[in-house]
Image 1: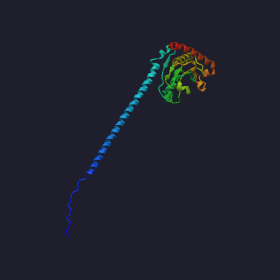
Image 2: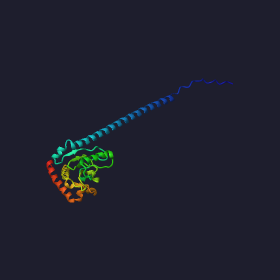
Image 3: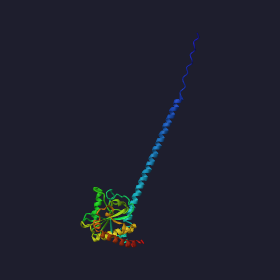
Image 4: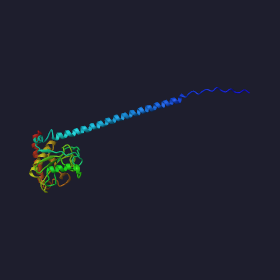
Amino acid sequence: MKRKSARPSFSRRPSFNKREKKDKGGRIRQRNQRLAFLVLFLLLVVTGVVILMVRNGQKQEKSAETSQEMNDHTNYGPEEWMSQGAPYIDVQLLTPNEYSRPQLPLNGADYIAIHYTANPGATAQNNRDYFENLSISHEAKVSSHFVVGLEGEVIQCIPTSEMSYATNSRNVDSISIECCHKDDTGVFEQETYDSVVKLAAWLCARFGLTSEQVIRHYDVTGKECPKYYVDHPDAWEQMKADISAQITIDQGLMGIS
């Protein structure tokens, strides 16, 4: 019986398939890593651009606010206003805060609202300082664009481009004037009365309003404010007539026909 001769033993050829798969997997991982880094870089760039745009917008907004305030009391300040018929206005703008100067834009000056302070004997400065202190005390949300004092002095607390907390539903489109008084009747001293008439008339001429757009707080909410001019409708009608006459004078001073 013949014995089968053993087949020669050959060493197996190395497998290049696994190596190729390994190399291919490595290349894919490297490509994915590069893509991830690229995406991360793009995200950082976009985030940086957005931050710069936001900061630039904030700067522009702040610049616009500053410009408006300058227009209100620097470029066209008290002396210019007086030449147009206004009383002297002491500009003491409140510190921006949510309780008395929220810096919300006025939708438009459609009304001039007359108030009384309801704290007999307090001065214009007292009332202005009370509004300022609300940023600390947080006891109420109240303020006024202007305060007219017992001797006719006028303090501006809020720019006429911003809303005050004074006339409830008409806050959005009215400019408010708080008036000081000596006693509980709420009647204005002659000096106070004269300044209120001049201030209201000047504002009407400036914003293209008539004396019919000068209102009392009472006309908005029924609140007894300004008290004396709610209790005495004839006195209120006389004030509006005086304001109307002054508007005509101021329009002449402003060159408005």
